Image 1 (cartoon, each protein chain N blue to C red):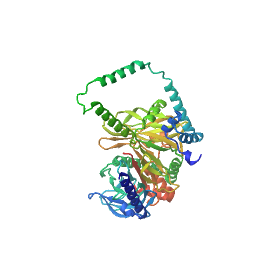
Image 2: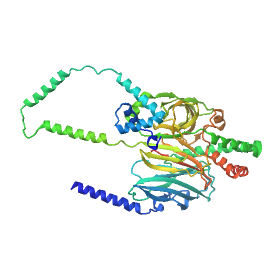
Image 3: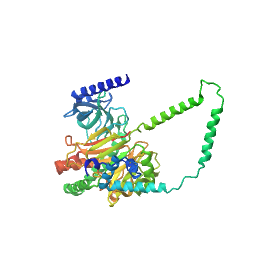
Image 4: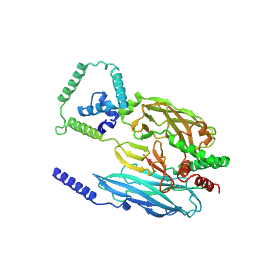
Length: 178
Length: 373
């Protein structure tokens, strides 16, 4: 598998793939990854299953669309026939503008990326905290290759411990997500 | 007008970035180390060795290889030191620490602490030092402590010191009972355990997962009960523990315990073991038993994610009481439960076995004797 396809797609992309909602390039990339990754294939299988379960939930309750349409038309007509008390001030327009502003604000907030996740990594090479893709801090192990590195995780700390080759002392590196 | 000013701003930013990339940065200006005036430790020297700051593309990379030489100005022996490492940034996080346990620094003596870190920052470089170092705590031989303790380093260092005393006693007893050859057998067994201990690489994601991921996890995952290991003389009893598991991912376990010690408890920690689909067991981590922040653990074997989790176990690994005293499991209890081969050895056992590996049996015997005087 080439480096391009080695990296696991996100769960969201796999879910979108299972739902047939990805563009052609993303779909091709994920298909190529799935050829060589059993774990992601299983996950996509679960998404397929989940999707079929959701689709089996049943039809929406019946609704009288004609009656609803009639009510909307009557409300619009009643609004037109009402006399205008203040010709220069148009409450309907003001309300519409306010709604538009609210909708724009809503879209703006919705499109803002969520605060990136704090991710802690612990391995023989060191410990790292990053936020999304942005590295925040890496404490590097300086252990000699033959020295054992003991690493450990808690929910908010990643630790790596080794014997420092220069000082002969135990050194414990920790990074924190909080 | 707007377009013209935007272009101008972009040009200025690019020029600024180019200016930064062309200018070598001084590692000394990237680091600041400060101690409180009443600190029992004093800085004798700071050596930045081959530390360097360089620019790569649009980012600045700080590779810090610093050695600090500190002197114990107190009338007591120092057993452990924790330095707080703060990386300058606007967002939260970027906090680390470098701790040195298993010390035996007499009053007036000096000792080195090495700090190796790598920091990546987008250009332009922020104003001021990139990394600030400070003292979080010092533990003395009588278990007294000095420092702001922002990282709960007091509890951690007390646990390390108690483990150190426990494990030194174990090796001293082997030496007393069976002579140097008996000690050699014990230390070789320790080195073998360290070599063969099954390990997982792991990643913890602290942020709440995205709604889609959380919903899928809730539907596809399952709640798994941890089999609770009972250690004799434990002051608390683990009543139940469970974790939500989905594939090779697991959430921090929810743990219930009952306190049978009659003493108020400040902190409880539980060791957490996971078993893969092939039946091999690993230490997944250590989790606080109360008010634990939720995290999603992803486990890897090499580069591949763990295929699945077939079972989990939990055991009481440490208890801190409200008076600051700490309980840890006895070595015998860990051995009886088959945990010695699964848990990392204590820092002191690691230090002693490394001493044997690099300097031989006689050096180890002399080192053990130093603590009997």
